[in-house]
Image (cartoon, rainbow, N blue to C red; front, side):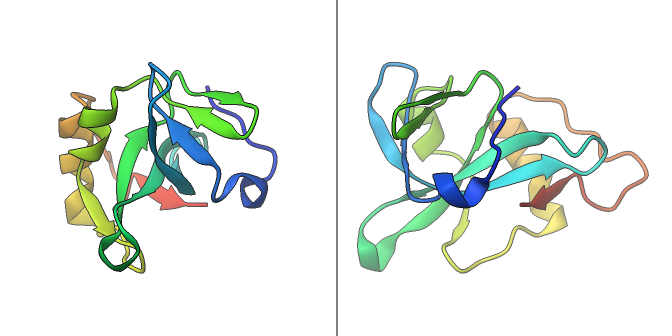
Length: 117
């Protein structure tokens, strides 16, 4: 499980893949609304005028000096569902993120499974 004492300290740090290739910059973390544990991070990718936020699971992520190393290859992360940098993840879009990483999705009786922190 990925633990971050203060996410504000990690915003803007590099996110690298399992081989050390830079993917982008950490923007935010999303928690599972049932457990309040970190489950996804958003990574800012692209050029200044065409940047977007992609989602990557935090399972297996490790904090290094000045970066967050995720357990997924760069191409898979860059092809993940995304939102605009000033956008919001809508509840109907959540299942696509889980499907992209072949993770089970079960919101149960809650309306949302993910909440931004």
